[in-house]
Length: 531
Image (cartoon, rainbow, N blue to C red; front, side, top):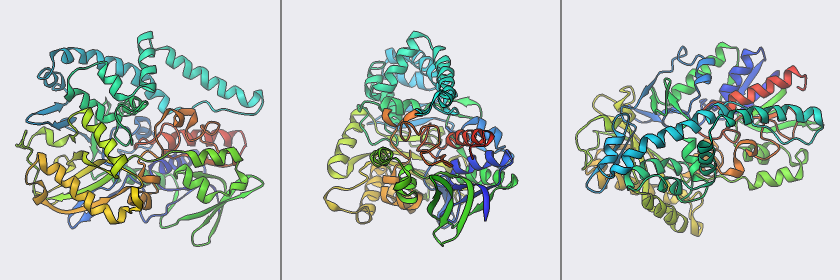
């Protein structure tokens, strides 16, 4: 069989890329290893009658242009906004984050901090607005060719430079700080009270195996404010039907545009001839030919498992081997007989629709990181719990609920030669007990659970070291350097082989941006007759 483009991996970025390519008239085939498309953005029944988003679990970063271009609402996607952004149980108190609430809540702990919040929001929004535009643009790439190859990259650099020049001097200084400082240093410079710093500092460590005082973690905080829900900037929401509803809508768009989607079809090898990708061989031995191959996989899975080292430059092979992954994530889904009742806010309310963050201070988060490095997991872990059934009653039987637990920090590899297969349930019990301390009776309400250690996330979804971002969001692995400097424009050293996954710009999260950007570059090469 011959097609124009083969997309390896049916995650949401692979589906996005395929949809754009098919809209341009190309014949596209998507090959997915699992029996369902969506990668980590899937919804499954994990206990009889209870469904939930298995891995990724909340919506904000999905790019509005991708939503429009793929007509996802027409294909069934509906996103509802949380009624409150976050709820932090504290020792004898609580802290609510949400529209119209945050400033008054902050004033209970520090009037000075409350007065500073509007300036903080304005200055962060100024940067986010500019960077939001760069999310769906290809970074300038380091090229070794002549002037003809360099001109497009110089133009990109000039365009990006113009966008950044719109920032005033204050914003430029803030941008430098956010790319280089720790989240802790950034927030300490703004605020004096622990609750507001913890609420915003959590975004600096979520999916990031680091202390909030690790340099570079301020960018991770910034990465999480790019999003919007239904046109409302900075909002977070829930996809009705779970995250699989996003992938399902994308797959429906792909099929309508003529994309062939094959599940239960793992790829064993990317075929090359004279340094050019020409197709793939599946795990069953089937050979499929194509003009171009696009990988939605983690970069190391592509270049270390599917592409022979002989067609890759030696330095590139070495750099890919050094590519760092590991987000310290332990993921759980639980079926509940009833809503949890938190000691500091026991009655049901809007706070049950938000992110419930058990991490009262940045010092708590720092101890969790230090603990995990020594022991393999935090004895007092960070837990963010969402209860999506408060917004979507299709996920659980009437009167029952489902909860997502996003837990940190855990080491990708345990010290002492221990295996996650042996420790999974012990750590899961600890996570349940951590919630129980703040919501007595929670453990007794758990009817069933699904537990995913870093090893499970790797085996199930191809997230190397359990990294939900497909690689750390550190300065040396961002923008033009993601995954490697010189291969930051979705092309690779192998002609006709492209990448479209979260291991490319702009990184992790359910955004669709890498798929969108990769498709643009592939179509540019088609027009130039390079493939």
